Each structure stands twice: as C-alpha cells, then as structure tokens.
Length: 262
Image 1 (cartoon, helix red, strand yellow):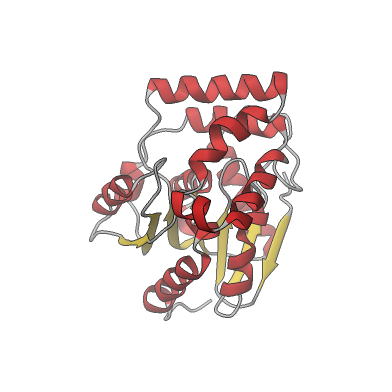
Image 2 (tube, rainbow, N blue to C red):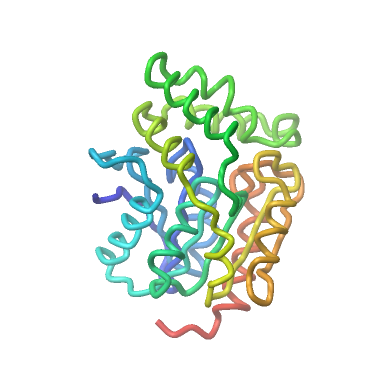
C-alpha cells in the first residue's frame, strides 16, 4: 500500500497522521508552520485523500504498517510519529509494532482506552449508514463533535473547511476506518513501554477525547508524558488553534529532541 503524501521542510522527520474522516489536508497549517524546524510528512491514511483502500480487512495495525513502509520509501530510519484522534490510534499501534522506528511520539485529542460496547455499536451504525446512504450521517452526527464551541462561534471559515473535508470522505474508507477503530485494543501498556519522549496535546473544549483522557495517558508513561492543553480548541486542536499547536510541537522538538543526530 503506497500512501499519498504531502511534505514540507527538511531535517528531523515528523510524520503527522490525520483524524477521521479527514485527510492530510487538515495539516496545512502544520506543513506551513513547522517546516521551519523539521521535515513534516503528512500521509493520507489508506482509503482517504489520494491513498487507495485496498482489499484488506479493517485494522489499525495495518495502517501502522503502512506508515512504516512509508518511512522505508522515504529513506527514513527513525522519525517522530504523531497523530490526532484516529491518527493517534494509528500512532499507538505504530509504537506497539515498530518501536525501533521512533525518535518520539505525539498524541493529540485521542485516547488509549478501547471503545465501550455502545461506542462500537455506534461506529457500526455510522459505517452501515454511510455505505447505504452516503455522507449525510457524517455531517449530522460526526461533524458537530469535531469542532469546539469557540470555533463554531468565532471561526466560521474553519468550520466550513472541516465540513468540506468531512463531506468529501470516501464512504468505503469511512466504514473501513470505523470498523478498524472499533476493534482497537487497550493501549495503556503500550504507553507504559515507551522508551522515547512523548507529547500529549488536547483541546480544552474536546468532548470526544477530553482532557481527562489526555491526563490518563500522561500518567501511564514512565516519568509522565508532557501534556499541553490547547485553549479554545475542540477535538481538532491542530485545525482550530494551529499557532498554539505548532508552538507546543516546536518546543517539544527543541527541548526533547534537539540533540538527536540523524
């Protein structure tokens, strides 16, 4: 599986994995803002954007292996790997399956706990609805939870951009990804085994993966992970407050990875 990728900058490789049901287009402000300090690599996860879905069964592990192959194709031995929401789930799978490829990890607006039964059932409901009726259910049920109230009230253009990305998501990829996320395991042991620096980011208005989930992940990491709460941001903190998000990532790379030799 070859992933379509947008990249910018040079130096320390930073791979950023997008949220559901978006694409690497969500990382525009990160490619522009972080390219000054590192090499930003933003792939479309399988089925989304420019990447094809393939015939495999739904699996976050498979998505993590796609990212490892992307590193091979780019000639990168180790990278900082991070993701937001679904991208965070894929990042944790990458930490579990490819720990030797990591320089550091970033988990944004995500959680290490598995879905409870009602959440799994809801994912299947949305998967079936998208396959039978298209993306209307994403606009009515998913979109309102992605954006915080401050963005809805004050940043109509950001909300409109996210809505456009949601509406353009391929139904087959949406259903596949929902089923992959529903089957994900508990990842607290994965965090506990981390041997690299970890940055945890969360929007203070995130209702899907609230700050309490971020705090639980930070406690699970040996020596505690670095936790930053992004003010006036909901679930898509990187899109809603890109300056604050980029500043936190830049500081993490500078202080935790400044001495890394590539």
